[in-house]
Amino acid sequence: MTPAPAPEVLQAPLVVEFPFTRSLGPVQSAFLTGLRERTVLGVRTADGRVLVPPVEYDPATADELRDLVEVAPTGTVTTWAWNPAPRRGQPLATPFAWALIRLDGADTALLHALDATGPDAVRTGMRVRVRWAGERTGAITDIACFEPYDGEATHELKPHDGVFADPVTGIVAPARLDYTYAPGRAQSRYLAALAGQKTVGERCPSCRKVYVPPRGACPTCGVATDEQVEVGPGGTVTTFCIVNIKARNLDIEVPYVYAHIALDGADLALHGRIGGVPYDQVRMGLRVTAVWTEGGRYPDHYRPTGEPDADYDTYKELL
Image (cartoon, rainbow, N blue to C red; front, side, top):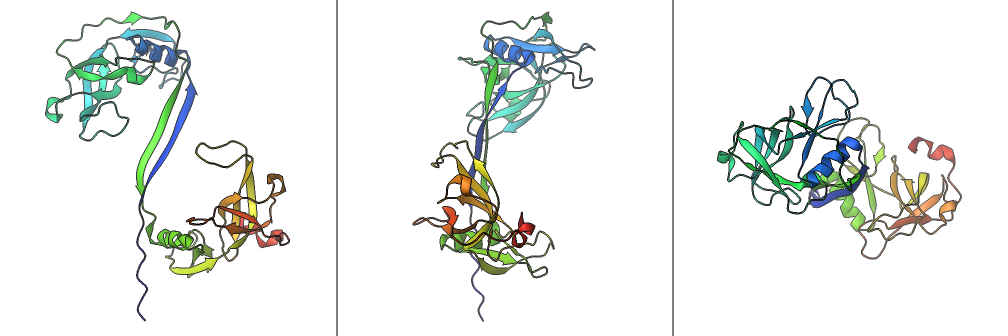
C-alpha cells in the first residue's frame, strides 16, 4: 500500500498586541513629566547612589525613595549592541545601536537608542548626549535617541522637588509581538480537516486516549501520536464562562458564553462559543453540535442539539 502524502506544513504570520494602561506614582510621574520639560531626573538612595531611571523603592533595601535629583543629559556608553534592521515602532528607522548609557551624575545606566553611522563608530566608553524629540508628551520617547558628544562630564547634581505644571499621571504602553507560527504536521492535519468541516484528533498508541486538537505526542505518555480519529460533531459542555466585555474587532454581542466542549470520541475538551440559546440557559452537561458558516475554516459556534443533558459521570474527568 502506498502511504498517503504528508500534508503541507502550514505557516502564518501572527500578531499579539494589546495596550497596557498604568497609573504613575510620584517618582515615575516626575521622571516622565521632566522628560517633557527636557529635564532628566534620578532618585537618590540612602547610601548615596543615584538611580536613572528612578524607581520608587530601593532595589537593595526596599526602602521608599523620594529624593529626586537632576542629572545631566550627557553620559557614557557602558555597553551596546548594533541593530542593523530596525523594526516598526523602534526609535529610529535607520540602523542604530541599543546602548546602556550612564548619565553624568547617575550610578546606573539607561537603555536607549544611539544614533551612529555604523558599528565601527560605537565603542564602550564613548561620550553621548540626549537628542530631544521635537514634540514631547511625557514619555521615554521624549528622548528621541542619543548622539555622539565630545564633551567631558562636568555636571553637578541638583536637588529637584519633582513639581511640574500639568504632571503626567498615567501612560498607555503598547505591547506587540510579531512572529511566524508553524503548527507542525499534527495541527496542520487538524486544520486541513477543519477546512472540510471535520474535526480530527490523534490517538495515543499507549493509553489509547484521543487528543483534540492533536499536538503530535501524548501529553501523558510522552509518545508520538499518528493515528487520526474523527470526533464530534456533537459534544458536551463541561464548563463555561459568560463574557460581558465586548472585544475590539469581534462582532459578537455581549453577553455570550465561551465553553469547554468535550466532543464525542475525544478525551480532551476544546473551547468554543455557544450560540442559539440564551446565555443564562447554558449549563454543564448541555449537549451541543458544531455550526459551520459557508466557507468557514472552523466552527463558528456550537448550538444545543435538544438531546437530554449528559450525565455528570460521563464528562467529569474532562473538566
